Image (cartoon, rainbow, N blue to C red; front, side, top):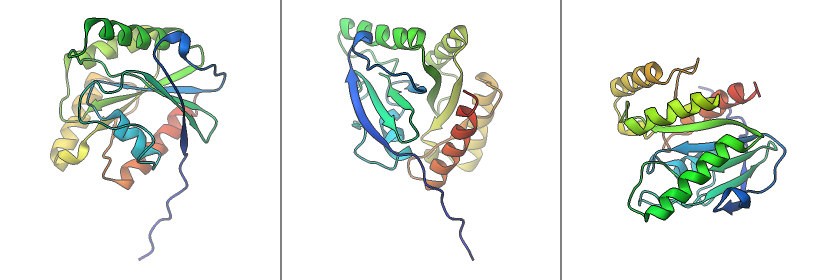
Length: 200
């Protein structure tokens, strides 16, 4: 039986980190940000989707990403990995800085095309995700919803998660189920992302 040959996927290289909006590197090309609740798996997603296990620093400790990390993608775009929302163990001043950085980036970054929004496939309907959804809508920011940790669900649970997330956070297209244990998930994401990003 012949197997379908996998198409080459974009690669990425670390560009720089920024603690504040004024530290963000200048960019005129298309830019996308990766945003989600703390511990949703943003760094693992970035490493897996670009087939580079050392691209983003991964930690089991929620709230580890405290800066906006920028990556230059081989297609000419830039991805920004933003600090996660919903983690409150750090000092209040740090929480304020993170929130300000994320808010200013999403509101004022002129070449930001859209949000790659990561949510945990196991926990639909979280209050913080609903708040984020309302915020995206208020900014008229397009989003591509990616449901992480799908390998921890049965096929039936995956189908239910897709239905519930699709109902609550409808964007005109169904969410993308994602598992960092699956090459098919990577291929599926790039197919969906390419179609979505092609509109910008």
